[in-house]
Image (cartoon, rainbow over all chains, first blue to last red; front, top):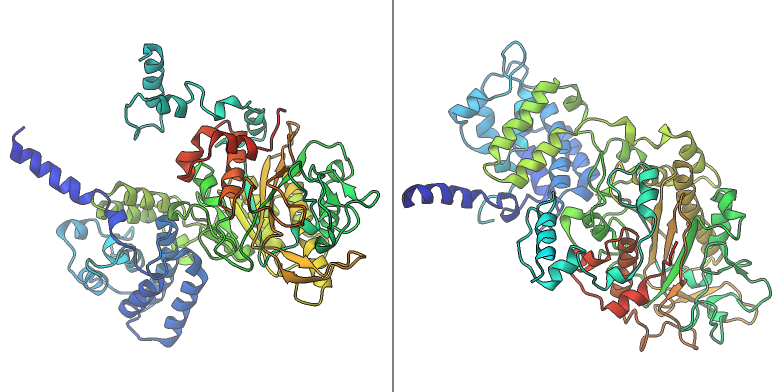
Length: 149
Length: 458
C-alpha cells in the first residue's frame, strides 16, 4: 500500500478516535435552553416551564457547568428532556414535510443526501416529525459543545 | 524468563477482557495475572464464588450498598471502639461516647463487633427488622460487621469515604441499568464524596420510587413509537458518531433502553414490599426499598442511600436516638431483603465526622459538639450460604483518651486509607486483591493490606 493511501486511512481514523472523550458534552441547563430556544417555535411559556421541570428532574444525571459526568447517563437524561420537547413541537407540526427546515432549526445546516435517504418515515412513507426531531436533538452535533467553547 | 510462565501469560492475555493489555513480561505482570504469588496471594480464598453462583448472580460480584450518614453520626455511641488490641481493649473513659461498656451485660456481640445492648438504638432498629434467624441468634454466622476507626471532617461533603465508584470499576454493573443508584446528587450518589472521582462509574440519581420505575423510560411518546423506528433512530445516531466507538456504544446502549421496565419495581417481591413497609412510616421507605431491591437483584450496579440529619448535637437530643433507630432499621431491612432473596450483600456505613456527649457520670446521651476524632466507618457482610468469619472486628484504634489515634493509627489522618481498606476487603472476597492498585490508582503496602483485612478463613 502506498504511503499516500496509508495517510488517507490514518488521518480520518485519528480524527475519529476519542470523539466523545475530547469534546465536552453540553451543560444540562445549556442543553435544555438550546432545545427550548430552537424547538419552542410558539414561544410558549408553558412549554418552557415544562422543559425546565424535566431538566430539574434529571439534573442529577445531566452535566453541570464544567463538571464531567457519566456520558451515558448524561445523554440518557438529555433524551428525557428531548422527548418532551419534541412531543410538544410535534403537536404544532402534524402536516410537516420539510426535513431540511428541521435540520436547520436544530443543527444549523441542511441534511446531506445520505441523511435525507435515511430520514425516519412512517409506514405510509411520510416523514415522522417526532422521531426525526428526537434524533437531531440527540445528534452528536447538538449534544456536544461547539469547538472552541 | 520461565517459558512456562510466559505461555500462561500469553494464554491469559488472549482471554476476553484483556484485549487492551500489552505483552510485557515483568514480575509485576505475573503477579497481576495471578500466575505467581503477590502479597494478595498469601491470603486464602473464600467460598464466595459458590455463594454467588447459588444466588444466581450472573456477573459474579457481590451486591454493594453504601449507607451514608450525613452530619457525623454517633457511631461510636453504638458500636464499641477500643485501643490497639481491638474493640474490647477498653480505654479509660467512655462518658463522651455516652455509654459504659464496662457495665455488666453491656455488650451485644450478635453481629461481630460489640454493640451497646442498653443504649444502641441502631442495634434496636436492626433487631426489629432483621429476620429472627439472625437477630435472635448470638451464634449466627450469616451477618457480621467490623469497624474502621479513623478521623473524618465534620459536617463536610469532601471526605472521600465512598468506595462505590471503585466497586463499579471493579465490575459491579447492572443487568438492566449498568450504573449504580444513589439517593443524593454527587459523584458518589451519597453525602460523602468518592475516593475515585470517575464519571463513567458515577451512580444515577434517584430521588423517589417513581424515579426508579421511570429510570429506563424516555417518556410516553417514545414508548409509543414503532419499535423499528426506535431502532432506526439510534442506527442513524451511530452513523452520525463517525468513528467514535465509545459514542456508538452509548447509542447502542440507549437503543436497548428507553422503555419502562417493570422488573425494576420492588413490589414484584411481596417479601421486599413487606420488609420495607413495617415500623414508623418514612417517606423514604419506598426509595430505599427500590434501591436495595435492584442492587440485590443485580438490575443495577452498587447503591448508595443517604440518611440526612445525623448532626446530633442540635437539640432536641431525643432526635439522635430516633435517627439511630432509623439507621438500624435500614441496615436490618437491607440484610433482611438479602436474606429473603438469598443474595450476599456487602454494606459500607460511612459518616462525616463524629459527635461527643456532655461527659456526664450517668452516661447521658446528650450530644453536645461535633467531634471529628470520634469518627468511624462500619463494614458489614451478609452471606446466605457460607459462614462469615472475621479474624478481627476493628481496624485502626482509639487512644486511652478516647479519641482516634492520629499518630500511630495505620489508617492515618484521613479517610483515604479506610476507603482503600474497605475496598481491599471487598476485593478479597472475590479473590482479586491484586487488582487493588489498578482499580483505585493507589497503593497499599503488603503489611497495610494484612492490617486492614477483617475476613478470616471460612
